[in-house]
Length: 192
Image 1: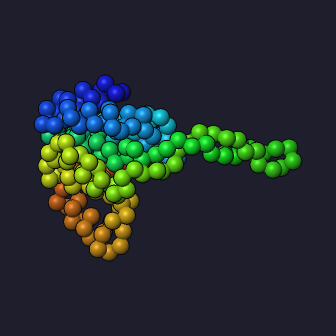
Image 2: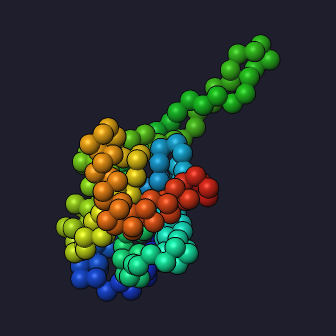
Image 3: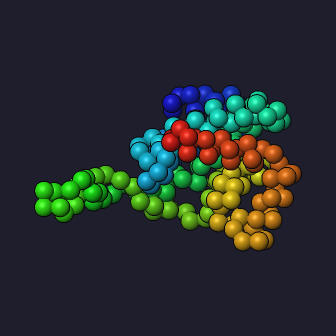
């Protein structure tokens, strides 16, 4: 998976992509991080796996719906939409219920898990945009897709003003909806 991810990014030939890959390899836990603390991809390497599944889903949606998007942009937005989750989780030991004892009380066992410990608390989509722009140029449609890829699940989209902003962005940039749908397919259908 790691090599496929790197190969896809390198094929974009986007100036700075080599430095971005170096950053991901040496300054972050991207390749070993989970995709979430307890839901999709809540395992070592879950973020990498999730990103590749989102890429595959995005490719299918772009073709199916005829949405215009360069191959380079598809790689960048799909593989890097959750770069905001690097250096974000920490491993912990948690108590988890594992059935019941003969006396009817819960049987608790210790299991490894993850908790959020954000090293750079800056939001979600906007954090991905900011981190990426330190290394590569992003086009407007890429910025918008990355920023709003959470759709209505983004805290900034809640409330009247936020929902109007999201709706306006989605109308102007169909790539937002395509990336959001690919992310939701990976999360909720494929559970990665």
